[in-house]
Length: 91
Image (cartoon, rainbow, N blue to C red; front, top):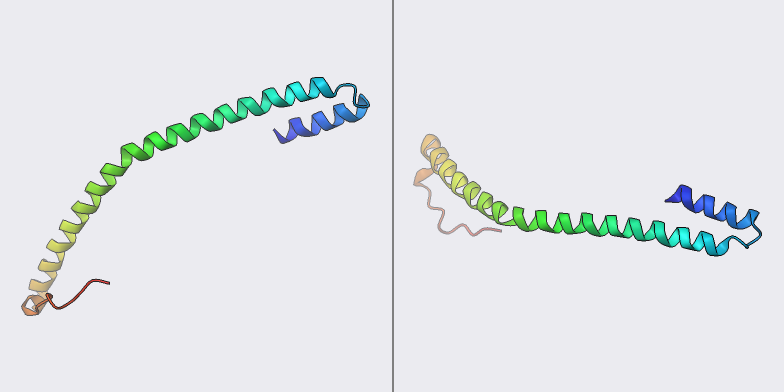
C-alpha cells in the first residue's frame, strides 16, 4: 500500500494533476480491498477468541485443582500439612 501511495503521488506530479481522477479511483479500490481484508481478519480473530475463551476457563479450573493437590502433597512431604491455612487470605 505504501508503494502504491508513492506511485500515485508520482503519477499526480507527472500528469500535472490531470490524472487525479484515475489516481483517486485506484486509491479507493486499493483501500477498499485492504479494509475488506482487515475486516475479515478481525472477524476470524473474534471467532477464535470466542471459541478459546471457554477452554481457557476450564484450563484455569484444572490448574487450580492441580495446585491444590500439589500443595497438599508438598505439605505432607515437608510436614507443613499440620499448619492451618484458613487464616491466610489471598492477595
